[in-house]
Length: 450
Image (cartoon, rainbow, N blue to C red):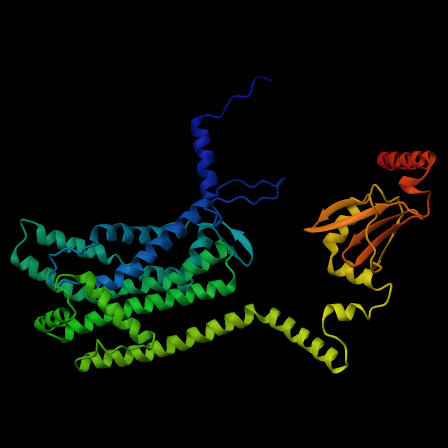
């Protein structure tokens, strides 16, 4: 066979696009099902969700501002963000179209049939119809009216007709606010993607709801203020707070400050309702803030109780044990309890409490301990010290000493108040004869061959 030719640029590009969209034939050997449409777990869908989430955050910030602070009654004056909003509306329309080509799971089975995908998407009122309702291209309608106003050949009658159309479709701009409901879907997808804990996810939802509610109410307060008062009264209100009539950024901060004082139940009193409409708005805002504040406190209490349930159960159990020991005349410290243990029980207790240190000690002493040695952990006699010379080792931040040999064939490891004996009845270990050591080396070689 000839040499393998490298893949051409077109083939590599096609392969990269296939991996990006998740489109691939079935591979029975690897047990991988093929897909004729875009796979939901493909990098393309991840990028699509990320861009959609970023644009929804943008809509969360700008949609209330466009209906309040940036609102202009003159249809021939363009909005501040009209250029970027055209791309945003186009993206959400394209997202609906692309969804018809993304595979779905029906009853736990992946399906890439276009007919099944379309039926599954359109039969759900919370998916297609909700997406269609929140993706009405209002900005494109504003842009077309703006083009009619700036057209040199437009007449006064055409502009008047456009004004009638604007008055008819202006309430539809409120539909942009419905896009904010998609934020919960984005937060859920974000939490599943990065495996965020349920408690942290609830906190993220609460923060998003609180900030979004205060942002919306700040914009609503400005709408009520400007619609219920004359221009002179609005300018006087801004002048009393040292804000110019054209400084909309500072006016927003002032409204947001007032809403924060209501939501946090502080109420400094420097900004108050001045007419009937503002009082009604403040009553509605206070009721909403009280309900939201109660929900947040309840959720935070539940999150805290769930996260500390295990430690609280342990504290209750320890408290019951300490109470039992005190009532029966026993010392409730560990040192007092250890004195009451039997001679052969401490090694089981130490093995349970300090398995890493004990395992490391046995591993370090394995060359010195013959095969089949038994271990016994016993209290070290008072005044017992490792003989000289001793062999220091360090395990888990603690200094240990051990000695080999002695009257019996053993290894002694001294650990604070405990001594670990590795005892064997064969030969004399390191202190034994040359034949014993040769037999031991032969057994080790046989075990290595096995």
